[in-house]
Image (tube, rainbow, N blue to C red; front, side, top):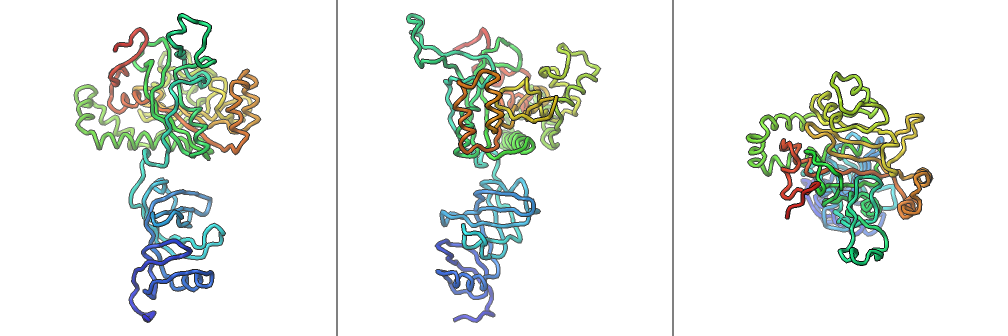
Length: 435
């Protein structure tokens, strides 16, 4: 039997069937607790624990922060309780951490013990691509149009030309304009989901920023209650991805910046080092009305923002990306959450405008309140077509939101490419579909 005065050592201790490493205690014999009495006795011997592992969940309250950390030795995670001052963006799902503190008996019945944190060190950050989002492959052929997200390509078998009365799917189907509605379904099971795939718009445009087929990154997040939280994810995705590209493909980026877009390197660094700005749609319209520039489309409240307006707003904000929030309800699809703001009647929508491009991201909080959504679908005559969507609000609905980012426009933004047709190998646009 060793004396309590011996030098502190490290050992492995087993509590309620779970192995916990790196306990610091006064008696270096290996201990096991099979009862509550033994657990209390054991905890008195424990002086300090250093727990290493990966964050499996984060729950932040006003005065306290809860983390569940797992080191892989058990299916069960250890609950870490910390002061809210420890909260930061780095403490995210998937980040590796080392936590030092006191192991104490938990007041909750869900676990026997918990770690009262005194120090939390982030060993490895978890960036956007690894932050707990489940990749969903949403359909390319769909019967929904995301209610006005764009002009549609209808899909029909070639044989229908000969037998026009037959319909392969019994209902009209289209090439997808967005995977958002499918992602909303899946976010009810996996909390955070994303898709990355082709989308299609049958818009008769040959502009430098439009394609008939392009790729889009879309995400949907459950338990999201504010535009501020959504914008934080959007800004983080833009900056983290840009830094990854700059780190992994420096010569490719340098080639573009040197020969195609001189000065783009400085412009990009300017975007990355500054916090993105936020203005309301109403503020944006007032800025445009006071502008000395003559616009092709006169800015007025209740009208959509055009590319010329978007580019001006970014210039006005010092060439820093800017979020425009709270658009008029009449401009946006039925699924966006109403703000209940009186006569203005806006929705919790957000667009991210970036230098040289205009709109890059578009997103919103979704209307999770059953009666609000039911009334809006009824007004639009869409209740029958979207009954399945309404049913999602009847069974365990939660506040949620999401966004989409056009991948080719993103490449234009970071590389300084003026024409979107130059960042995709086989551009498809009106009157052109080579190969």
